[in-house]
Length: 319
Length: 264
Image 1 (cartoon, chains in turn red, brown):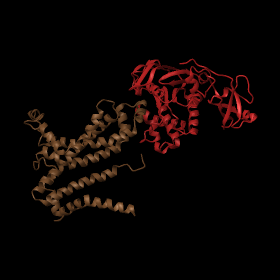
Image 2: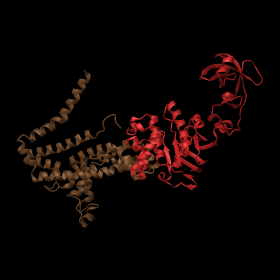
Image 3: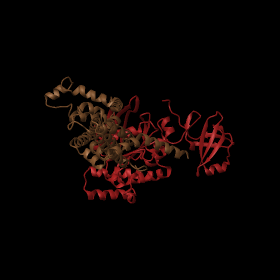
Image 4: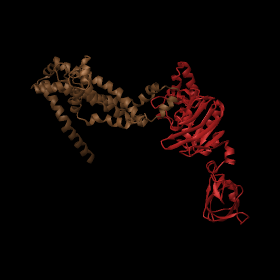
């Protein structure tokens, strides 16, 4: 089901959470709402779900105006950052909740819940209570619960934000595979640009209640519309009055044309990737991304003096 | 050593304040044997007082549970103006002396000069010196307990579970019954126990609005006072024991209802 948000504004007292936001999301796509905290991304998701009423503007779901519809009638599945598990119910009862509301037959519910529990690999935990599960298991349960009612839109609010890095990476991949299998229109909120680029087909970058840019992950990275997108989607540093990606620097051992003198402050080994912190002659700090082999060839150590040049840089008109 | 001392101090304090007086009441009630005790709590007036106390307590508990849960939800969940005032008003019965409550009800409901009394008595409704005003007085003094137990629980569970239920298609009342109520049930149960204890023991307000008519509007605490004033010490102490036993039963129920620590 396609989603269209049209000129939506939402205020909480004096705070403008959404400032005349418009966004179109294609049927069966996987979209990330990416932005720092307070950028309005969660509010936008909650407006789509009907959990917040916009002050002005319109929400259209599957071509029909849903602005006045209560959440119960929007056919959306919602997954919360802190799981929102029904604490007094077992895993099985949590997943079955939406089906019981729909008064499906007992046999049908049992069959459907069994399918979902195996989909999220929680068959063995069906009779446990949420308090007896790990964070990752709880979130998988919450996903199964949301999927049980066969929503036409799946909305996830920072779904992996409360989990540790390894579980987060696992669930991320799992969500991507799930979407490739089920093809339900999915929107998820994240403040992690790597997560957004890893999982989503399209990303809407938000800041101060506005959408700064919408596009494919690669387009945002290669053609950012403004300084905010440049600095938020992927790493970027200020160099010589322009923005440069850390992998777009050339590090020279001799002075060269257009190269600026710098001192190696620290070298951080991350495996294949090496990050070199530099202090420029004017006192600015930048970091440069090299491969391990490049570093080995240059035999850099901290304290060395080098020259850096931007192979590729980007300047933006003042906004 | 120090902890032992602290424990003795606490126990000694409790013994002096609580155990000694109550123990003596028990002692006096049974001083002339179990038969005398039994005879004095099975007189028609005593039985009537016992029955009346229980009836009033049951009505007050049901009313205050329904009101208390609704009021707590209004205070925590509804974003309506005036909920701060509501929150403050709920505590009023704790601060106000029950005698003042009784006098207030008297002013409103007496059938000659009262505010609503004449109109009600024209329509055949007798408020004062009858069950209705006694129930009202008891409801008033035992009003805060359910609200005060439920409000912090509602704050703690937050709105996410209710929102999740809504997105799963659950209508508002079904969400309340299947999600909110189970989450606050221990608070409600604890509030009910406190309300029961308070309602059974109420004396001041009921004393004024009931008119203390023997065998008609005498609750158990009023009956104790009446027996005491009539120099029927066995009667007074026996009825006191009955009241104390009811109170103890509610306290036992309270510890039974309290969720065990470490479970959620």
